[in-house]
Length: 202
Image (tube, rainbow, N blue to C red):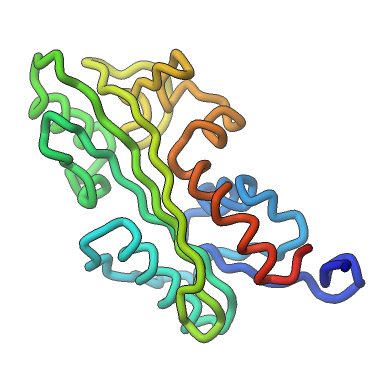
């Protein structure tokens, strides 16, 4: 059966619950959203992330954006968990310090010279229908370790997160490899089939 786009009808709209155009483009590419009209959330929208898990925060964002726009909405929430720090910074990864360099400095300072540097990037995605109800969820995890100094480009903690499977940091990974091995890419792959089914993209 042909989907709406193939039948010449308007493409279904999917709002990504983010104001960051790069993140919106990244998630759209991961979903292979060629038959979707992908939009970012309305400007100046600030949703307080009060959940106690990544999934809870993803649900909060997806449901708020869906309710506000009356469209399907997809949100993600991600964080870095360092085993030797008891899972910190975790849910507070983006709020660990005011800027990316300061976040990295704080993390490396707290970790110190310990040889136990295992960590994971964790991502959760939630899809809410136009009524504001979450109907799909998925999670992805990428295991790695924390380097003692930055290696390669990238924002966030990407330059210090080493993925043994790729033999490089998150920051050095090309997009196709990050899609395959990264936590957000894994979550996107899990949620994509159900998302396309629900939006009529067969």
